[in-house]
Length: 161
Image (cartoon, rainbow, N blue to C red; front, side, top):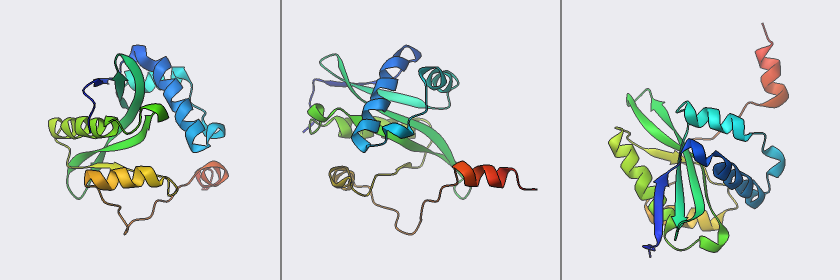
């Protein structure tokens, strides 16, 4: 069920403080508060520079969630895609169709901008989100494994001749 009291709007630079609060709430939900190093200033630079874009959900005018995304490029397809970095809806506003509205809007952005896909990751323990994503018609990409280079290993490699 999609609640007609929910409006999805584009996030603006003036929303940086709100978006920052959502990021922090998401980090609390995921148990990753110690991983948040972004500041409002850095976030604002990325928004102003067009490196990331944000959608904000409002329920009866109250901000209740956000999606932060950016554009990718597929060399095989020669086309852009959207990568959803974060999606968060405050717990008390879940199961009202807000997630569905977010993905409908992301699909519209993708079509408008000539993108051929929307990608994202989900934590393995987040069964509710996984079920929701499957209901959207998405599928896990089982034949690819995400790798990450960071911290000491990244520094070591960067300093290698």
